[in-house]
Amino acid sequence: MANVQAFCNQAKVDLLEGRHAFSGAYRTVDVFKIALFFETTGDIGAATTTLDAAAGECTGTGYTAGGEIVTNGSAPALDSSTAHWTPSANVTFAGITINSDNFNGALLYNSSQGNRAISAHTFTGQQIVSGDFVLTMPTPDGTNGLVRIA
Amino acid sequence: MIDNEAPLDIVDTTLGPMRKCELDALAQRKETIIDNPNEVTRIIEYFFGQNLIKRSAHTHLKKGLSVGLKLG
Image (tube, rainbow over all chains, first blue to last red; front, side, top):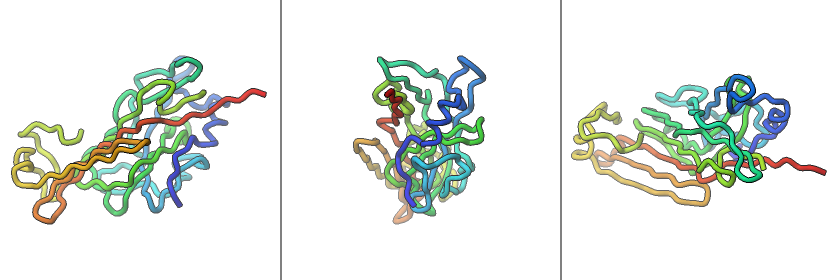
């Protein structure tokens, strides 16, 4: 098992089916969350369909199963020919201890639509002890944005 | 957030809550930066003797993911 950075395959179908509302332009905006995954037991990647089907979500003191809600203050936008969306604030896991294993994966998913997975992101494995883990989002544009359709 | 508390703010450690100024005075602080094409991660650790009593991290993802729409 390993966490692999990827746009989830099922999310491509879900986008065509209109399951994800990143803004309230057409219908009520969905709630999106980010969950963290252990390096050894995590298996998030292209084949991930939902949070619940993914193995290896982190456990630890202060960490809530399912992770944290992402702040969605910026609607999807167009940058040249690329549409993009990025959470509008850091995602903070405050006052946690996750030290039974390194974690190196974060799954973005739609908690309003059956926890359907959108994208898996990886970073250097790390542990937190009586501290905070802060995830800062990339520049919200057509080149770097967290979710892009080119 | 990470390591930007005011001196009198209460912070958690494995030894229990303490003021940030006490943590800075009593513990050894170590900072590590990881910078690669995918991320910049800043790790702040505090040691009391040989014991790790606090570890926080701030990861900045440099780039998200793209899905392409194809015609033809």
